[in-house]
Image 1 (cartoon, rainbow, N blue to C red):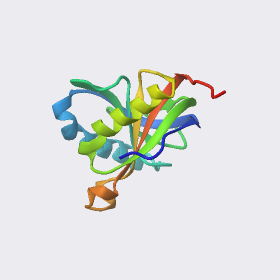
Image 2: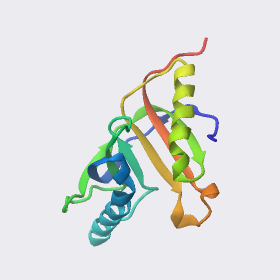
Image 3: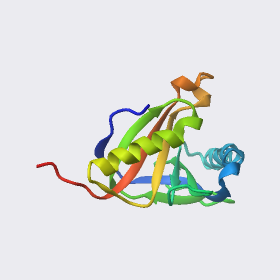
Image 4: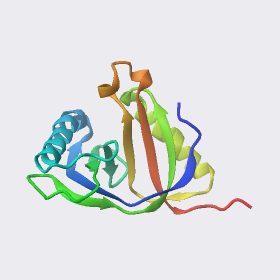
Length: 159
């Protein structure tokens, strides 16, 4: 279900983002309009994404999703409407890639979090999903790829 996880360094990244808090069952209704709003703001300012868009969850989702829809940019966006300028800090993360439809992400996260815990690492409260290939790349969900990232506050060293 997921590729072999690894521990790596994620560099700092400037973003254009929209913060959203929504009940779990409404997540699909806010994603499309949110990402469209960010891309429109970037286009109006002559800015382009410098990588795939992602969601940064401030805590592990439960009945509520508290997250930012983010697009990586090379220079700061001028805030407009709900779109703000932000930055993801450089950090050590556990990372893997899940391949499949979005309905399988919960199970993929479960498998990934078990790996992190099994390795003896301690994770931060936040996490992010980077959408490498999704519906825009083709109709076959088996070809969609989502990068899962969990910042680590303590990495167990192998001896």
